[in-house]
Image (tube, rainbow, N blue to C red; front, side, top):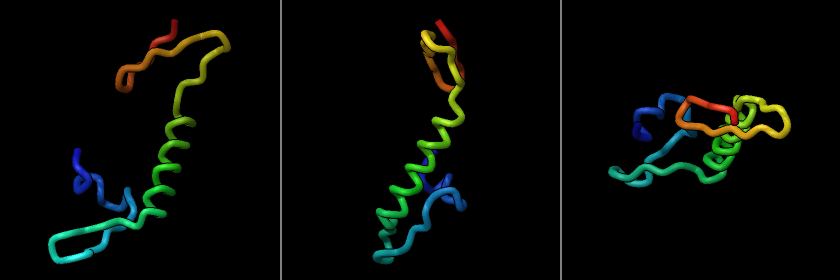
Length: 63
């Protein structure tokens, strides 16, 4: 997937620096990344203490 495929309102707004160059605001990108990290952490499966998770893509196993 490219940045242009996920740009439909899912990432910070880009703007033209020149006619052939687009850029993003660093603060907006960093804030967006932190929100994505938090969402990922919250969506991760909760494990009982002493259990290990091994992930591959969207699949998780516990050992």
